[in-house]
Image 1: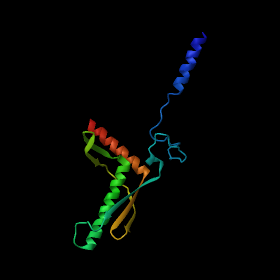
Image 2: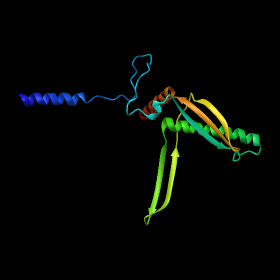
Image 3: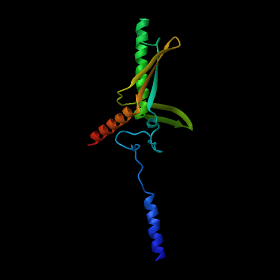
Image 4: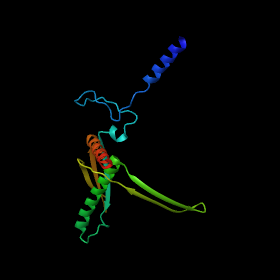
Length: 162
């Protein structure tokens, strides 16, 4: 009789330890109450209120003869670089690497990176000249938009698989 009670007690303890961990923090009520604590598996991006990304571009290498047009192209390129950095933070990066080894020596080592995604709702924080020949653009994105973008991405993936 005692071994049967011990077995039941052990099974009860083991089942009590089998609870699921939510992917997103659970809100206290529908109003989105503050005070929710992110769990261990919550991505670092979701622990911040906004994510920031900075892009850079050099003025002198822009493909135009007019210096004013080169400056405008550099501003545009730095903004696109900042959007690329935001996309990396939201969706991650696809890396493809190949290394060739012969006679225990690396003959070639190539990396290719690909970033793909949709970004909307980014806020332009600043466009600043850095030094004499570079522009820096900083963008920010609210984490609620990041969650929406990820859900949109996951729903598109699910639709492609059907």
